[in-house]
Image 1 (tube, rainbow, N blue to C red):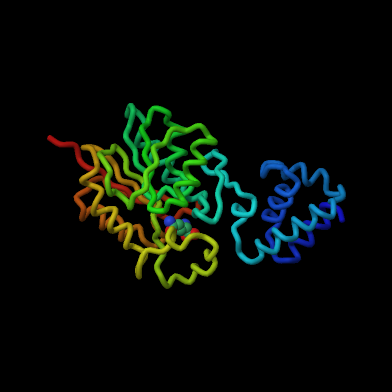
Image 2 (image 1 turned 30 degrees about the vertical axis):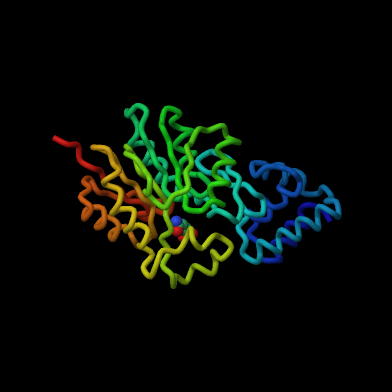
Length: 274
Ligand code: GLN
């Protein structure tokens, strides 16, 4: 079979064309940026063993496993991250909170930053990469996640201080506290589609706000005067999170939108003293 035929067969199994292309490139030892190569070689023959490995991955994808787990890699904010089932797959929408963080840190030398529930390390590593002068810490409660994050930092040569902790326990004082905590409600109908990802990275109580509430309550005591708290949240949680931020005494409370134009992260600032 040639490459065009195996791609058609994968779509027959129910895969998106893009997913099938990414998996085919992976078994061919090529990167996700080489889709043009695939198109130019669509009459090339595929070796039997490679074809079988490709079909096995397609079946797993059809069963709902994220492409990133099958290829072992996901690009986030320009960084190639290694990921597996120990961590949530970094979402493109989460790049919005990184951009916001970088906007706020502009003009502030050697800022102290902490990423709460870092998972693969995505947010912390993106900030460390864009701001080599920043002192970036990242925590996660999961030792498994920290192993993934540390390996990413090492591969990318980025200096982030990782620590096993739940939210702000054992934390110091920061110019920026940022995080993408679990925020999906226990009974959310989308959860079955996310069943291959760690439940502990997704689900936060009956309304999905348990972890956001805990973080907002603890954060002001760890913010330097003028420091910011930025949090990602669910598509319908912006108003609830802004209310929490204001109730915690933070000022300049606002939200920013994701790629789909949905208010996806909210933040507030500890006012300067005096
Ligand atoms: N954005 C993810 C999703 O809905 C959830 C991430 C999270 O809970 N932090 O697929």
